Length: 434
Image (cartoon, rainbow, N blue to C red; front, side):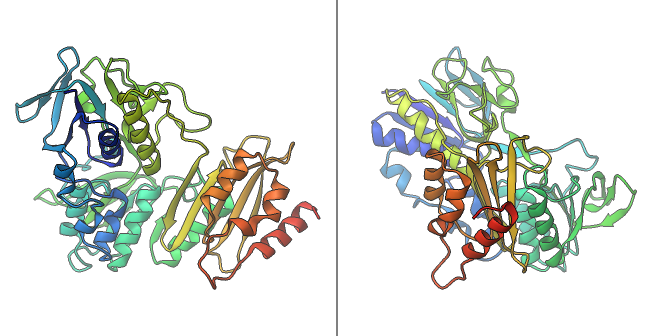
C-alpha cells in the first residue's frame, strides 16, 4: 500500500490527509512536533481571552483520526533523504515514505535583536506561544506592561489579547502609519486612531534596538532604536511577520528559496515530494499574489489540490480572486480583489474612500481610472458577501455597476443600519457620476 507522509498538522496538511482519505485507501501518516491533534490556529487568541477552551479549537474529535485510518506521529523531523525516501527524526527514529507532503507552516521572524531569545520573549503563532503568554502574562499584576514589536495582523491580535486582561501594551511599528504598506492612507489612519482609542501606546516610525534581561535571563525592558528610550516590560511579543519553517530542508536536495519551491501543481524539484501552505513558494507568482501566501484559506485550497494530484487527478493550484479577512480590535476587515496601499498602487488605479463619522466604518473601492473597471474593495465595520464580489470580479463589472448594486453585497445582520445610500451619494458627489 502506498504510504503518504505529511510533515505538519496545520490546515494544509490535515486538509490534504482528509481529501486523500476521501479519494483512496492509501496509508496516511501525519507528523507534528507541536500538538497531538489538529487545532484552529486563528482561534488561539480567543483561548487567552476566555471565549473558549483549547479543546474547543479542535474541529475534530480525538477518535476521528483512528476511525478514518489516519496515523498521527509526534516527532521533529531533522533531515530528509530523498534518495532513499527516508525521514530522520531528532529522536533518532526513521520513517519511510512513498510520497511526501511538506506542510510545516511558518515561524515568527527574528532579526538578530540582542535578547530576542530571553524568557518572556515570544511570538504568537504556535500553541507553545499561547502557553508561554499565559505563564508570563496571566494578569496585570504579573505582567505590568508588554511590548509588541511589529505592526501586522498578528501584532494587532496580540494587542487585543493583552487588552482583554487590562495589561498595558506598547506597540512598536516601524512604518509611519499602521499597516500602510497594505492599506490605503485613509484606512491606515483610521486604524491608528482606533488602536489609541483602546488605550494602547502606539509608537509609529519606531524600531527595537535590544531587549534587556535581569540576572536570571528574564526580560525586564526594551531599548528604542531612534531615541534610546528604555521601556520597562515583562513580556515582549515578536510579531514582525513570519517566514517559512523549512530549516530542516536546507541540507536536502529539495530546492528552496525563502520557502520550498513548487510549480503550479505544488510539486517540488524532487519526484514524489510536494509542498503546500505557508512553507510553499511558487516559482512564479500567480497574478498579483505573492509567491508565498501565509493565509488560512489558501493553505486549505492547496491541501485539496495536492490530494487530487496524489490520487491520480493531476490538478493545478488555482486560488481564484484574492480575498482575505481580519479584525482590528472590534472592527472587522474584509478585502476582495486588489486595493493597493497609497504608496504601491499603480498609476491606473483610482480609489473612492468613504468613512463614517464615528470612525469605525469605512470602505475603499479601487477601479481603473482609464476603463472604469472594478478592481477591488476594502470594507471596515460593514460585512459584505464574498460570493457577490467574486462574481462581479469574474464578470469584470465596472465601478458604476458595483456602486449601484452595493446593497446586494451587504451581509450585516438583520436590523443593523445600512450605509449603502450614504456611500452612493458620496460617490456621486465626489466623482460627479449620476
